Length: 108
Image 1: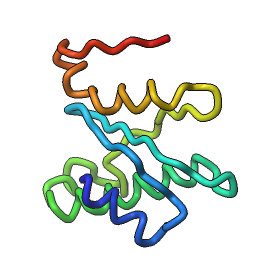
Image 2: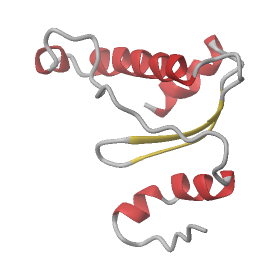
Image 3: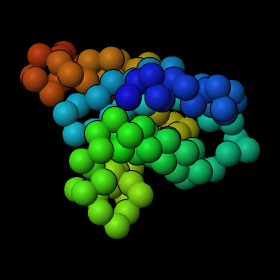
Image 4: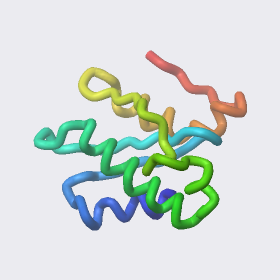
């Protein structure tokens, strides 16, 4: 999955993925998106490309998600201006530990 996300830069060089981490049922991405792109368009690019990769790697997903082209839920969370980037970066880096109760993350 991380390889697929990193390959997005090849086709969309203006998108800069800085950090990637995940839980068992979600993914966190810290990235820079130029102002000319709506965030919803970038999320759509990410979801459609990763869904295609997952369906190719795991053919059984075509049966599980019959009638749809995606394996992702419709929703997503985005924070743009106003959140301290360093806090978000630490959260993404420590995501696995946090889910297991081992992280000492401090939100200001």
